[in-house]
Image 1 (cartoon, rainbow, N blue to C red):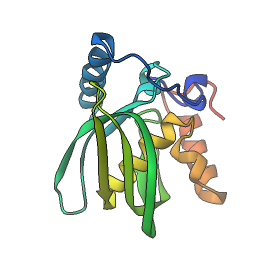
Image 2: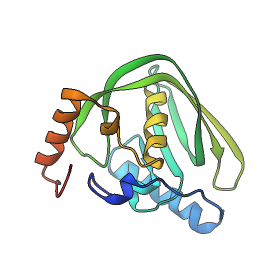
Image 3: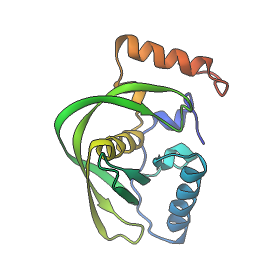
Image 4: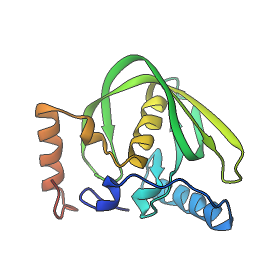
Length: 167
């Protein structure tokens, strides 16, 4: 797992152009890594692959499970109210902060076999979709924080046992 300070987390990911067994293995490995880390989503750059791919196994606010993956995702719609809710990240273990996100999100992309997919999320699942799309654009949730919230989150990251050279 790549941690805060790793340059790969701040670099926008490349579009996937080859849909082969290696891509399918990457997606399966990402699920295994996400489950081992007890996460609800994982972007490829978090495991050192600079490709536009993410996986998720995430509940919404009604506790309905959403399970899947998206290759070359695009956040095509956000809306509803903006909610400041608790958010963490597998690349900043143990760090959490109230982060503003839209309550509705739609992501379009394709599957590992190149079939079109459209994922609609509300509540916590919408937060997850926005979070993972941010990763693929080289952003972390801390980039959405301002003022005291941002300073506290980055201070917590600097003091974390896993910290090396964090901002």
